[in-house]
Image (cartoon, rainbow, N blue to C red; front, side, top):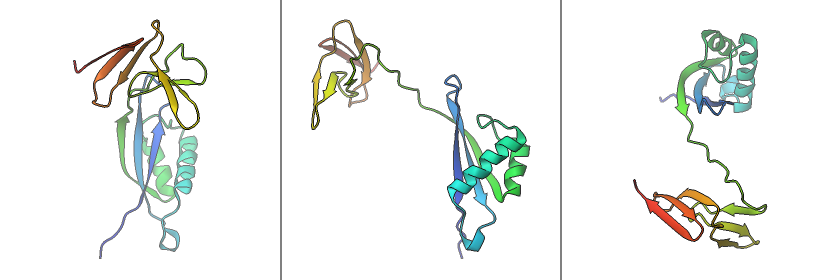
Length: 149
């Protein structure tokens, strides 16, 4: 007979952009009331309580005190892994209200209900984007240059 392990995974996000990473922490529900795993909301509440009780930061690696606290609440640590976040996209400056930059073409677009109307950005605006072929592109006005270098 196979045993099924259901684990609650927590992605504890770093609030600092300089850190640019978070921990994925996986626990196993050892209590299983009535043979069912408890909800993720229960696991998150237990985690928040243990962070507070132990003074552990959600941005740091889980400490032994945090693990012991979670174990006391019926959650056994299976693994924790530091995961690097993808680079954050920076908002372009100088975009008029109600407009956006199309991520595939670098064009300046405005949503008009069922469709978007796109035009090249002004000559004083440079847009960097990745096209549908995965090439890094730079658009200034009507001119777009893409390269794999």
